[in-house]
Length: 185
View 1 (spheres, rainbow, N blue to C red):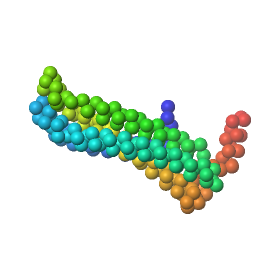
View 2: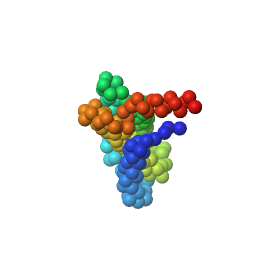
View 3: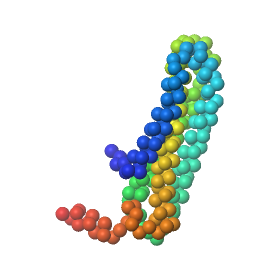
View 4: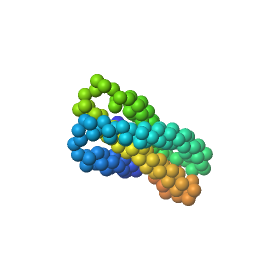
């Protein structure tokens, strides 16, 4: 199981709240008929495809930025704890999941369902709500990743740029000695 820090819990909560708020828009539309859903799919699909493309591009960019973050982290005079690198690893994992999910959703939404003649009309409303839900989840996932990245970057700025000596992610000799003493017992 992944151990979440206070910062990660806040970032994930922010993403969940964002998904919920975005999803409320679909709820407030009310119950729509199959024909209405078919028309709404035709008008909303280009925007949803653009959203998926944007999330894919942002996720790939964030993965590249994580390499830069690791470079700065390892080249600093201050030694960082393993917890910092675990944060970066968690960001990379969640970002990769968001990247793959956005690619899959993009491919699924490019199936020309509104052009098919043998699809029951009732399926359109299900497909429409499903596309809205997936968009909300993907958006919330990307928001979580960005918030987690912000936490990691702000920690590095505080340690490297501002020279904070008492940051929790800063490795301290006395912590290492206490850890070794506990392992010996």
